[in-house]
Length: 182
Image (cartoon, rainbow, N blue to C red; front, side, top):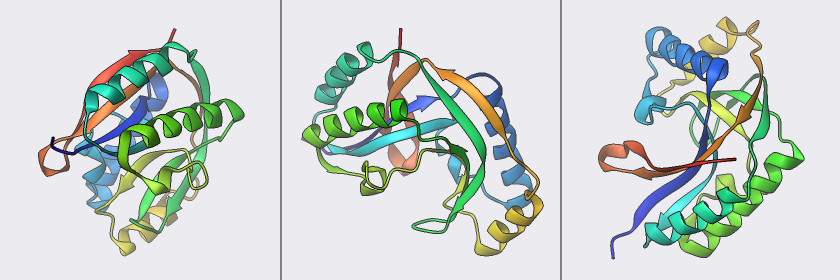
């Protein structure tokens, strides 16, 4: 069976989603960075990995998602990563609820995947909404940090979904299945 690269995310909705997309456009125009748009939906990533049977992951996530109620997310400010890729992102507050959800998803993927993303392990996970990454030069990162020093996004939103996403050819990512939280 062929290995498949997958991830589990929650899609943003409302004002925070519109703002992330607006910022994607700004980064594309002003800083020549559009790699984040390989997945067309602003999102919060929980975990990912490589698996042999996406159906097993789907069944488990359907079960997990049926036991997760819609949950609040707070976005407060922006920050950067330098490694493994330069990135600028909106900070997501790491609440106990968010940590519990993350730990459940991480544990499930560890049972189903041959490899998981260690950057998204509970010890390393830094919840965020990416605005630019992958193709952001060092110079453009520094310019963006300076240009955005007074930009402090603040949003409170309720998340109503989890999604299983799948990597397709040329690093394109698409939703494989969306689970509505009730």
